[in-house]
Each structure stands twice: as C-alpha cells, then as structure tokens.
Amino acid sequence: MNEMSKEYAIGIDLGTTYSCMAYLDEEGSPVVEKNFEQEDTTPSVILFNENGEIIVGSPAKDMAMMYSMERVVTAIKRQMGQTGPEVDVEIDGAVYTPVSLSAAILKKMINDFNDNHGTDIKKAVITCPAYFGQLERDATKNAGMIAGLEEVTIINEPTAAAISFGLGGGVEGRKRVLVYDLGGGTFDVTVLEIEGNSFTAVATDGERLLGGKDWDAELIKIIKRKIMDEYGVDESEFDSDDDVKQNLILDSETIKKRLSSAESTKGTLTVGGRKAVYTVTREEFEAETRSLMDATLEKMDSALSSKGFSMGDIDEVILVGGSSRMPQVKAGISAKYPSANLRLFDPDQSIAKGAAIFAGTHNWNLREDMEDAEKKGEEYVPAAGEIVVHNVLSQTFGIKAVYDDTSAEMISNIIFRNEKLPISSIKTYYPVDDGQSSIMVEIYESAANNVEGERRIELVEGCPVGDFEMTLPEGVTKNTPIAVKFTATDEGILIASADCLGSHKEYQLQNRLQMSDSEIQKSRGLVEKVQRA
Ligand code: AMP
Image (spheres, rainbow, N blue to C red):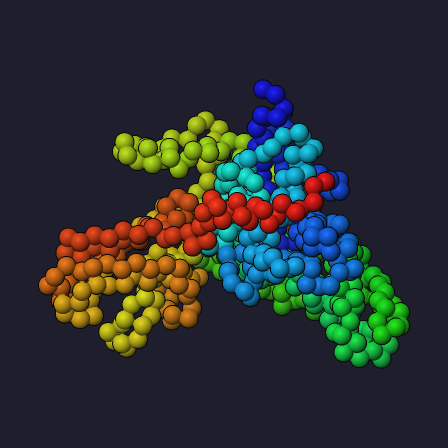
C-alpha cells in the first residue's frame, strides 16, 4: 500500500470553541494530530480577510482584533441545525450557512492532516453532543461532506469520551459511568454502561447554550464593574468601542484559565484612553458563576433521576471538556454528591481520541449490513473487536392532535427521549369528522420526558420537524381508529407510519438539510478559499 492510498482512522471533535482531530497510529493507539500551528486543538474561529481568504484557528483568533466583528465568526456550533437569514453570514456578497462555516473549520483540519501525512482522507467519525436532534446531526454530517469527506459517521461526544476512557483506561467488567462534559459552548451529561467493547447510553441530558463562553461572559461583567468602580469609566465606553469589546472577549478567557490554577490574577485593559489594571479572585469569579455551575448540577440530577439512579449507582464520574478544569466543577459536584468518584479525564482530547478508536473498528457499511441481516430475518453480528454503541433517543417525538376534552391542539408524544434505541410505539387516534377524506400527520420534536404531564404538551414546547398526509379510506367515522406508529432506528432515525382500515402510509423523517450532490459541490466551492497551510 503506498502512502497516498493509506486509510487512516480519523476522529474529529468539532467543538464550539476548540476542535480536535485524532487518528490511530501503526500500533492502533489514538494520537492527536497537531495542526499546522503545532497545536493539539484548533480554535473554532473563522476570519474572512480582505483578500477573500478564509483563515481558521489561532491565526484567525489572533488577527480578529484587526478586523471588524462581522468578519470574524465564533461559536458557530450553537447555530447548527438552524437555517435562514438570522443564522447565515454574508461576507463580500457570499452567503455562508452554519453548515458551510463548520465545513471551513473541518477543512482546515483536514487540509493540515493531508499535508502532514501526504494523504487525502475521505472518511471520518465526527462527534456531536448527545442531545443534538436529527437536524443538528444532519448539519454536522453535511459539514463533513462539504469539507471534502465522502463518508461521515456521527457519534455522540460522551460516548466517544467513554470509549477513550473504557478502552484506554482499562475498564474491567461492567461499569456504569457518568460523563460530565462541559465544553466551550455546550454542556452534556450522559450515563453510560461500559462492558468490554459495548457502550450503552442509558440517560442523557444537556444544555445547548451552556459552556465556557458563559463563564467568560460573567467574567466580563466582573471586569467591567471593577474598571467602572475604580477608574470611573462609563459603561457606554466599553460598548461603543469594538476593540475594547474584542479585547474583553479574549482577555476574559485567558483570565478564566489562569483562575483555574491561581487564586487571583491581574489584567489590564485600555478603555476610554486610560489603561486600567484590575485584579480578579477565584472566589469572586466562582460567586458570580454559581448559577451556571448549579445549572449543570441540575442537569446531572435530572439525567440520574430519569432512570431512578442515585450517585451510588455510578461507578465513576468522568469530567471532560476544557471547562471541567475549573476547580468549581469538581468542588461543586463533590459538595452535592459527596460519594461521587470523580476523574478529570484527558479533558481536551478524549472525545477526538475516542472517535478515532471508534473509526478504527467501525464497519462503514453498517447500515447496509444491518438491513441485509434484517431481510434475512437474522440479527446483525458485529465483527470481533467492533465497538458496539447503543444510544438512547435524544429527543421526544409526537404528533399534533386535537384533544376532545379541551378541543385544543396539542402535541401527543409517542416515543420519548432517554428510551433505548431501537424503539417502537403505537398510539391510536381518531378522525375529527365522519367521512374525513385525509389526515395530516404533523411530527414534533421536543425535550419532554415520559412522565405524567409531559405525554401531552403545548405546541410551543415542541418544534415541527416533518409531516405527511394520508388519504383515508371511504366510510371512516369519528370512531374509526388510526394507528400511528413511530419507530426510531439504532441511529435515532425516525420512521412514522399510519394505518387505517387496511390503508397504510409510511414516512421517514426527511433530512430537512439534505443537500444534493450539486449543493454540496457548490458549498465546497465556497470553502475552497480556506487557506492551505
Ligand atoms: P472544549 O470545547 O471542550 O475544547 O472546551 C473549551 C472550553 O474550555 C473553552 O471555553 C475554554 O476557555 C475552556 N478551558 C480550557 N482550559 C481551561 C482551563 N484551564 N480553565 C478553565 N477553562 C478552560
């Protein structure tokens, strides 16, 4: 095999603030790939310079100060899965979607890898938060395709961290772990059962808008308050100056990191023509951010209680994500759960490494092989050593229904989050009118739990994700049952069907962000301008 055709097992952690890429070396051990700048992680920052070039990573972060804020894109992961003008970025007449912006980050990492290894990688495992819904997963996959990959498999970040922990850390027997993943922009908590090569998620929860960036924002408030008090600077002087704003964003992150190892630290900021020097203590920072920390503890609690677990049922709590380095994380968890067995585990790299380990054993034809097995009435048997991942459904799915008791339109939930995949459930509905000719099945996604009071929820609590129309046979009455069946596959793909008096209609939830080959090609053109190292 020559070097050009060598296939690497690649895992990519596409993070909100930092991204990381790992591959398996000759011995099959995961190794983090250093980018062109010789860093283990690449800031997920994109800069569009005046020459029409797209710069990604530390150079973009470093040069951000010299450009107007519109030319610098950060935290794009928070917009994944959304579409439309509010989330698109228009620069020099070209429109970039969150998908193509994420593709730019991936492309930089892939370019760096290809240049370093003299190869042209076409397959990768990319991670996403466990609670990402179908749209966000599809968006992530599409970003990989636009970045030039031909095959992309998505796995959950906590599962990847658990793989790295389980297979790299020598888990013996069966272990139940809780992965607490506090990254730059997202928070994820997942309970997994590890046994040999099998990783089964049993409960997951998270907050898409909670991460290190929020701690930075609180620190900015502290810094501003101190400078206002000590130097008599007016609030408007911070807000009217883009340079000051950018400096505060960059400095707050640096100071936050310093406060992870020092009890107090100093900083300077030039604002309103004056150079201010300020001191921030860890105690002040922790007091200001207590509610953020508490929010993560609440999510931890709800993930545990959704399965009736207490901390005594958890063998180990694995802390991953860069923000887990903040001392308040360990202290906060220990205070709430004194019996917790905590371990800070390779916080910046475990997800990418776990994804690479998974890529190394992954059957890239899994879907076809599973379908073939099903056709033959057999069960798919993984190859020896193949890592088997079982997930829980990350979202609850239901349909819009009119309730007789209130005549109100509500979401009637059918399959629920945190139920082990694959799952299937049937609910019976009835036509509203005698002789009704058709029904519209409108599918909603939400975060509802399978508990009394959440099986039926208000429309505004869910998000419409798809619909299909079914023609009803003649002669239906208000009393003719219509059986609506929802099935979620191993991968969490939803298949809905409706049956009424022998009529049957099936619908697979469409990838609403499905991009045709030509659309992918067109978007590839957009990110071609990502600078090659
Ligand atoms: P990740 O998305 O997992 O790479 O996490 C990145 C986040 O971790 C960013 O918000 C960083 O500011 C934060 N982070 C990295 N190192 C530290 C540290 N030593 N102390 C506090 N936060 C950190």
